[in-house]
Length: 165
Length: 105
Image (cartoon, rainbow over all chains, first blue to last red; front, side, top):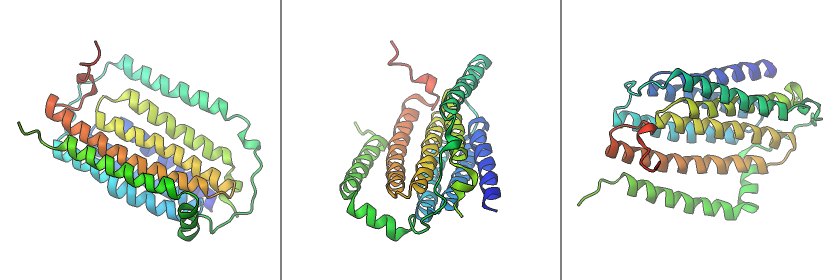
């Protein structure tokens, strides 16, 4: 059952990722990206990482992609204005992506022989367990993250502000 | 029953490799800077899947904490990136990356 779910999620994920690249209108790309992120959240659920699945939906689909959508609508970029790249460049891009895939796959040869412990700690991905680890071992990076967010917020406001001269 | 022992860790490795390659291809393929940012998000998510898969495989929660940090950094990156995009649109009138070649020479 979960194997079937894995393959369905994988196919949908790859399909929507391809549609992000190949769809003509930017708004369609954003919607396909949201769909792809939901599929990735489904993968997290299959892996028993419930906290990350929920955070993934809230942060990515709820915040980041809404920001993208808002920018596209704010700048009125939905019309397909980009002059088309020459076909040679498109073919070159696809070939480069394919070559990278080839290199990655050839590096992963032999991974199917890695032994996997069939016992699974189903409680590991829960909020309680992750929270204990986050606030005990990773306290300093967590606090640094807030400084990163503060600086990103200041930078975004400063860049987005209209210059008055 | 563990999903990783059912489908094997190499299925997750393949999925992550394919998603990452699609992201790289998208960065090279498109000229619209917004879609390039989205392809970068795709690449980050390919790595996230792999982090969670290996974290579950080794029963080690550090991988999932790392994914949490990656999400936070991605959110900050997108906020600043879109602010730069808006600035670029205001100054140049488009988000085509080919118009940004003033630093080229």
